[in-house]
Image 1 (cartoon, rainbow, N blue to C red):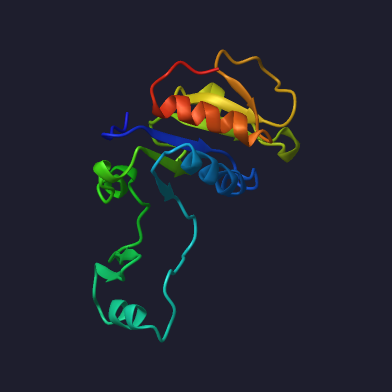
Image 2 (cartoon, helix red, strand yellow):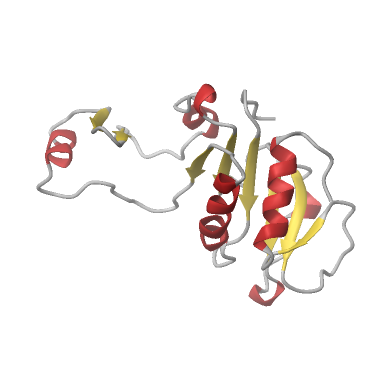
Length: 176
């Protein structure tokens, strides 16, 4: 089980389920409830956060790693790896200062052992992750499930309901 000083909660689902869409709606609700939230997102493809021609890009491409850029409002750190390898969740958590946050939400990393809410849309034709992952603590879906799990069930389209679950989780209160 991955451990961190603050609550760690993932959102696990197959591609196309709407993880990012849900999180974009969920984050402002949780912020309005007073939670300071760190977010870790797994990307399955190459991505870049700076653009050719920008100083940070040119310095990173010239060999700076890590490359840290900061302003009065924002800090970004970019680390290029010598060899291509999947990110390690525990390593990514080491970049988060526990004193600055109340909760870490994770999108992806569904194979890692930590508490997760499974997002499920039966019309995608994908199986539930829940039966094979003991770390799934709730399921949010938009249809009738083929099984009756012994964990909380939520409506994937009811963001307020999911926010309440996450808030209770972050405060270690019993849920649903």
